[in-house]
Image (cartoon, rainbow, N blue to C red):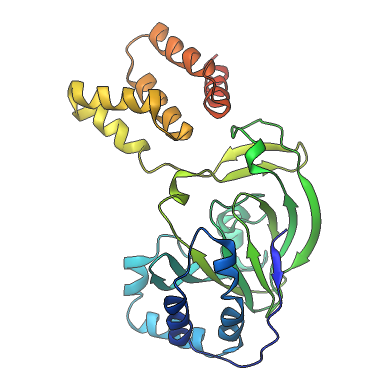
Length: 297
């Protein structure tokens, strides 16, 4: 499960001071120890009971202009700062009785949706009782990465992100099924950002069957490849075919194959492309193509 980090300091700092400390420390988004080193500072930020209220009031007064420009996470998240190799955000966790949950459904807030992360991050409970999580672990290196694949999941515990509790979530290791808090709760995250995380997969899991239920990652190239096929002529088609054959990401290779299949003129060609993918040495690509073939039957 995520690593719990002790932060007994009762001093409080503001967001600006927190950002200055992270900038001065040159956080490495790919290094768990680098992120963990900022746990005491995140704990001190959480001790500041006014900074978030002041921040959101300013946002409302400015018609949420900064959120419109920089927030790609939707209504549950308020972006507090984006720095070099990291960003800071506040997450709001409504209870299941909240009208917004009843209207949008629990999955809109990632409740009861077991998943891992393709990035490491620090989190601290800031307000409210905190959401609950059922925590599991798995070995990412032993997983090919396709829906339906069996995964040995290890249940660790159920616990709550209470106010002041600081956890380090480890990329591709920690899985949690989040459950709604009793009342509205807030957490603050320090998240490492790197181009590498955008090309690695994040999974949704079936805890009862102990399988991968789906891929949560959408590769940035998926729609661009379709545009290249539609508008790029032979050059565009050759590039997508090259991606299908030898891109370092097997997920991107699969997206390229599907784009080519969608653009193919006859059923035999489509079948041949998918069968070749299903016979690939890559476990992920083969599994994804087999699933697509089964769906096409």
